[in-house]
Amino acid sequence: MMKNSLFLCMAMVFMSCASQEKAIALWPEGKIPNQIPSEVEEVHHRTDILRISKVQTPTLAVFLPPKEIATGQAMLIFPGGGYSILAYDWEGTDIAEYFNKKGIACFVVKYRLPSDETQTNKHYVPLIDAQRAIRMVRSRAEEWGVAENKIGVIGFSAGGHLASTLGTKFDKKVYEPIDTIDQVSARPDFMVLMYPVITMAEYTHAGSRDNLLGKNASKQRIVEFSSELHISKDTPPAYLVHAMDDTVVPRNNSEYYWGSSSVEREGNSKGALYLYETGGHGFGLAQDDQVLRKWPINVLEWINSLEIE
Image (tube, rainbow, N blue to C red; front, side, top):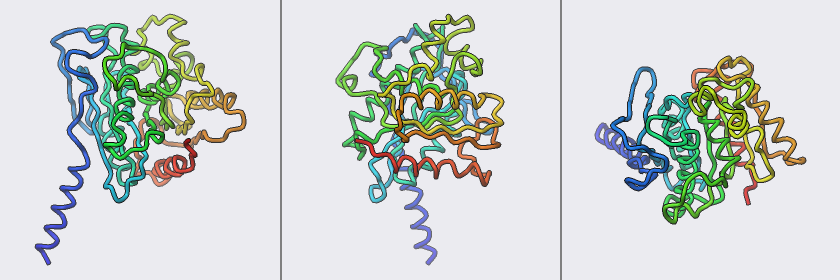
């Protein structure tokens, strides 16, 4: 009996490890757009969570569910961190492991953070990596058991801003194509925006804005990166989650997006806004909160309700 239990435990550990492939580089060596050669190295700092900064080689970590429960759905995950760091496990790999258990293929994007030292036109760099990441997933959909029309994104805080930027600027040319991957559509089929930074104007998160656009950003640049101003009939449906007592990224951000998107929906009820009374900012999966912990279940129900053509 003990041997059987030991074998079962080892098998479960093996299956858990096998679900994640080695991180895949988004770009061929020497062909990373807007990159300035430097001696800067990536930094990993672990306290309560793993914080990654100074990303030089953007990657895609692949988490595939067991084939017997795979739904064909996929989500690219953009961790937050104010465009200064990436909360890589708290809002990245932890999220992937949760949704993997629900049959969803997940891809954690380690995107580059804006830097005047290592990049040109730094404000476009996160979007460049985001476009490339979703194109890569869609180009390998058959290999990874994913339906090409069921590939969404989920972003947290500044990662939510990046997800919404991708959703509203998926067809904006921000880099020169380098291979066949770049011929694939970068449009997400749905978006989940968790306590997202949306606007770069009033009620923005100043740190995210300053890191992305610079402290003296022009009005034109502020408008360009305020996602609520760029929603169109082609923008994918979005599910927004925010806590009403969030003092870091005010709930106005989600409300701005929801209000703007309602104008374009014209009676289409695919989008959703869910405001929690309490929760603050950066709650991740919120597994210790009996109310907040329900958000992933609600998101799953919403994704399954979408009739994606």
